[in-house]
Image (cartoon, rainbow, N blue to C red; front, top):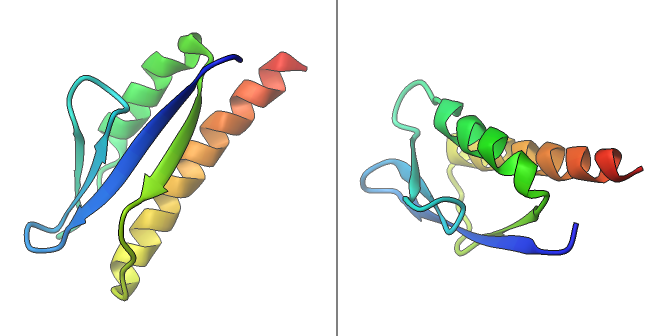
Length: 91
C-alpha cells in the first residue's frame, strides 16, 4: 500500500446532505433527511479495494446535530473498516 486517497467530507445542512469529494470521479452525496442509504458509498469502496490505497477522510466542519453526528460517525467507521481490511490483506 503505497498511495493514499485524501477525501473531504462537507455538510450541507440546508439540503440535508453529506458530500464526500475526491473519492470517486463524482461527489458522493448522502441524504440524511430521512432514511440514510450508504449503498453508493459502499459500492465505491468495493471498487476501490483493488487499488490498495488507504483513504484519509477529513471533515471540514463540526456539527451539534445528534442525528448528523451519528451519520458522520457511521461514515468514519465504514472508512476505518475499509482501511483495516487493506492492512489485514498485507499481513
